[in-house]
Amino acid sequence: MLIALNKPMNMLSQFTSEGGWPALDTLGLPKKIYAAGRLDRDSEGLLLLTDDGGLQARISSPKYKSPKVYFALVEGVPDGDALNRLRAGVTLKDGKTAPCEAETVDTPDWIWDRDPPVRVRKTITDTWVRLTLTEGKNRQVRRMCAAVGYPVIRLIRYSIGPHTLETLAPGAWRHVG
Picture (cartoon, rainbow, N blue to C red):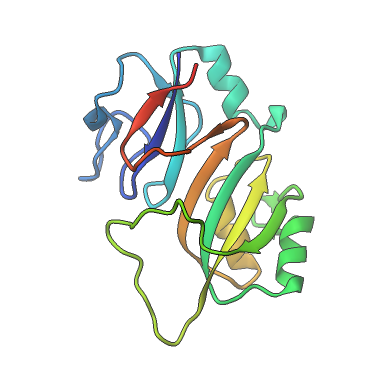
């Protein structure tokens, strides 16, 4: 069994609540499934869940290089140098990231309103950046963007391999395999 879930903001990617934050057990998911990878509490978007340990390993292990597409709303407007640095790989405290795809994009038409809303600042422009990564270091997209001077203020994972959010609302899920 494979389930695609649109994990809402401020929800843990686990089945037990912790620190007062809600967890996946509140969403009516089938029993005995596990997350194949994680999304941080403050990140949103696609989380795959399965009851198959081998499939879970293939989805979450960086050795399989499954592409993951993220949309990051960043402070400012990244210039060509910043995007080229992201594409080439950024050196972080735990090593250099693998090369990735990075481009600025218009606000995707499928983006939902976030709860709580993103804080709007009149003096700071924000920009959507689409990144495709094949690894998954802890808070990697946030750390990469900050390292090139553009902090992330909202992060949504759109796809993992062939699986996408498509029309899933936050907190909704569907069987995909």
